[in-house]
Amino acid sequence: MSAELNTLPDDVLFHVFSFCNGDDISAFSQVCRQFRQVCDDDYLWKQLFLRRFGHAPEGNLSTYKAEYYESERTILSVADDCTIAHNHNPYWQTIDDHRSIFGRVSLLHAVSWLHVFGELHGVHSGTYNVIWRLSVLPRAQHIFDINFRAEANGNITESRLPESANLLDFGSDYFDFVLPEPLVVLKPFEDVAVECRCTTNTWKSNLKLCSVRLEPIDERRRGQRLRWAEQVKRSAQASNGNRPWQIRFLRSRPGASYRLWKPWIQRQWYEAGFIAMFCAIALALFVHILFTHTAK
Image (cartoon, rainbow, N blue to C red; front, side, top):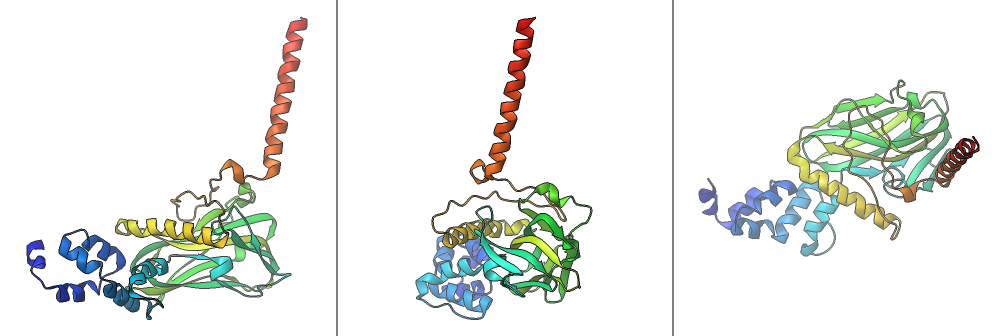
């Protein structure tokens, strides 16, 4: 089969490759020298971008490959990429938070009509976990009424936070909430709408929203997951200058909530104080026992 493909002229290969996605092109480029030359063609990447996103980016041809991978996003920052109803004080506030992925989060003070929505463009066909990263603050109210949802061409997955989960056990740390049912994207390069919404008369309060992302379940999309990590890294660095970016690659379980790993330098000042106090008490107790035994 490979020998027959090698006999095809470059213009035929170019036409065939123009119907592929970025992952396929990367795989084809490793087959042989001829394939690599066709796959590295700048005009091919322009056609791929135009087919996937519906428009050609500004700039010269040499930037289209980089623009393609940069636009191939499967993650949104709630603060920077989503639309929030009543996004102003005293309801919502955008704050800096070095513990979040992007360095900025949306903080919910209190609101009755809660609606946060965004859209991911040109998503590959496949099956995805929909993952919201958030933080529940002390004295949070009616957060279990909020419906988290994602939709792609009529396919819908949605869920509320499980009331059985002890979310306050995480303190103010961020955790991932994975919608129980995966999202199926049937057609190539669909737009995926994501939202969290609650329009009841109850007042929702004390919640931080960091991001929402799609994590491919199909192992063939492993390269896309790795590029997701790189996209987050670049976005985090760009959003906060030279701030050190640190994140652990997350493998989440549907409906799971867990404590996010944090390096020591990112812990709160009072956590170090509690640890120091505990060590001082333990040392005092040890000295007391030692002198007691010595006196006897």
